[in-house]
Length: 176
Image (cartoon, rainbow, N blue to C red; front, side, top):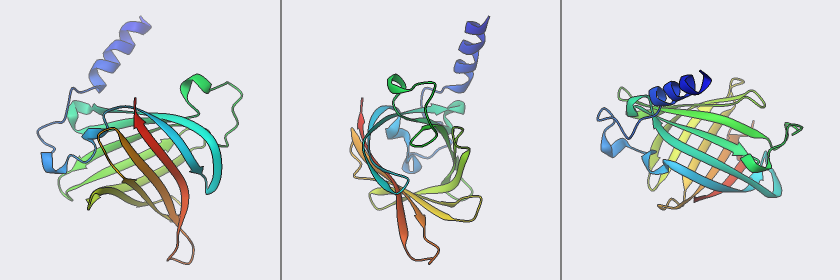
């Protein structure tokens, strides 16, 4: 019974590709579909050597959205007694919004109840996501150094001075 429910849920969620409703020139995230290994250089603003993770991307909801799952530490390294520090098992939904010609982004890490809401657009060769946390702190997440098989992801928050962006996360990804 559980297997058939899981199969039906998976079939209803997953999509084979981008919906025609998402214009090809605005398909910012389709290249990410697949699995990636992560080398985490910094997390939560402090250098933390040796952290490893993984992220998996897929088209969902009839190809109108991209969903991903960011996992740190990697699945094979996770244990029941993990502390909340440096622990991520979260999901992002990216939905194309034709009214603003941008992507609406919602991220949640249930491990720490961390929620982010952003808007994603292309900026030159990069993808930049801008938003704010529930407490009003502005955030900026960027995909840079993008190739078919690698990217660098940088997460920042705006300091109280309103000028200085503080590094919170830096991940180097390689396609698996």
